[in-house]
Length: 325
Image: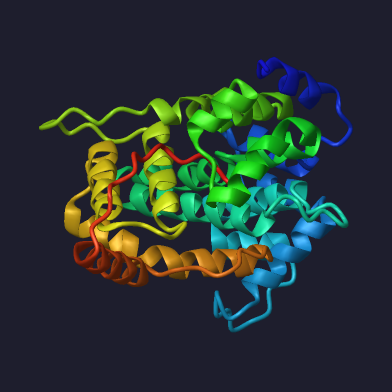
């Protein structure tokens, strides 16, 4: 079935999640070159729920603030504009995607674990290769597959075959998305972001990330947003579990090609991902289920390789993973 059927439902169905107005205001305001942190704080404090969450986090041990912070304006002084923006947007996105009462079909823990891992990984990679894009990389990573859950909430009948395949094999593939929906999760997400009225730079980057090509070798080209999303999603797939030694090496190579990151710096990023994902999940109050560290992934892959050498079996062709949940 062509993906237009789902897009039409995005635009008409009352089950489509809506992004809180404060998020749209934050994005619109911070795109203006003369935006001030005072203006940003004024917008955020108009949403009591997001304000309460930001204050709770900033007064938590995570920040180690000696004196209690009681207002967004106080928080803005401590956080700065970029961190305040990303915190407000992250809480808004989580607020938009809520598990419906009694819904046991869609695995929200897996969805959030994958989205947060991609977001954290994209931001960590940006800190090493394209620092001005750090915050945008996090938001884009967090949003890059939100079309999956929005599509499920809007058109569960169309998504059911993907959920069935996920239950059988643990994940569905890009090829499955094209066969069942007529579009990838990247296209669906980009369409959703457009319906929400988010900036074209963001929706365009999400739409393009699956087609990101290696950066030119021997140049000083820095990665753009689609490349950072692609590398972050690659790492998220690795941390989904059941990775082989070949998968780990393929992920390393892909991240280096997409971002130009030094191999040693990449290892630092991979080592830091799991801890940061747990921190962010706690901050956003989302359940992500059990997670693996990079060391555990490597150890499991090495064990699997040793067993395969002892009992060789015919290799199965691997396909690009989709966004199973």
